[in-house]
Image 1 (spheres, helix red, strand yellow):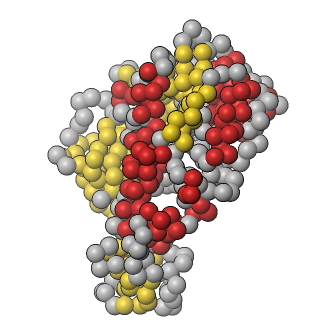
Image 2 (image 1 turned 135 degrees about the vertical axis):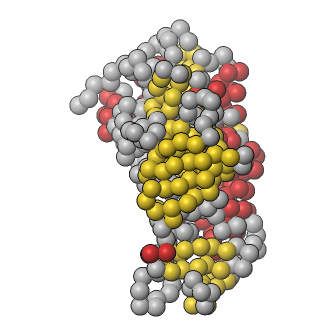
Image 3 (image 1 turned 180 degrees about the horizontal axis):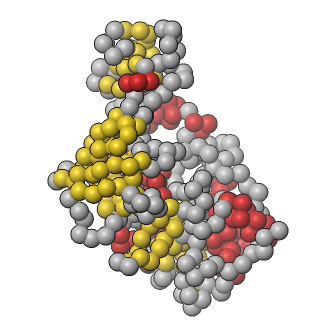
Length: 371
């Protein structure tokens, strides 16, 4: 079995004399981070965020930040004999993440609440709290690497690309990246679990979270109905010429590129091509209609070297599960125009377009929202 070893120099969150705040979700990853830092002699303080209201909390295992996870984080902190605080962020999480999630679906977009949460809650307010506690850094259990490059700190994809979470962290501000640490970025998940077992952590075999934390069993509609009562309205599934094919019970049930669950059959596979929130129409067509080589992106966050270029070659990741694809980017006053070398399928408004370096595709250069 792999022995629990100190973090390497590239993983270390602080010197033994410094204080580190660890964002503890109650899962195995952040628990291992806290335990390894404690073993190094670091002054560790654990913080867990209570993010959403009790009546929307998932009841099943495998969802993050629920009441059971707060309990698990507290148990680990007690085992490690470190201070642990639970901060009530329900109001700001609801306003910044949950309300936006509901409004995005009702507008025909496909939101990514984890990006919004990292951007507007975890890496904003939590960073301020860590500084108020006199910490030298904030460490998390994310699988992403922080690298000191020739021009300063850089964000890179994790060594284990199957676990890489850089897509969800692209909105991290440059000044915050100086303060953040990601000790698991060079580890695989199996290595992390082995460390948890060696460290005798009670969460060593706890399942990974699967769903969006405030969406029980992946049932988006039920959550949106609670947040926006009466806002889900029926409409029509139409072909690319506008011909009505079948009724649907709300555009929130569809996303660009979707094939399964359409409830229609005309002799050939159909995919969702567009969603029109104004007319409540879901436009379907053949797979050949899915490809796009031009993508408009707004609200750019730049993590590459300064000054930010007017144009550059990059690799872009258009969905969290896709591999980065080569493209050219032209920046302007309101965002950027992305020209893909090869058309990509399932480009959905509301998803992120994340830029990586064009050679190895490892360094995160920034990104923006697909519009």
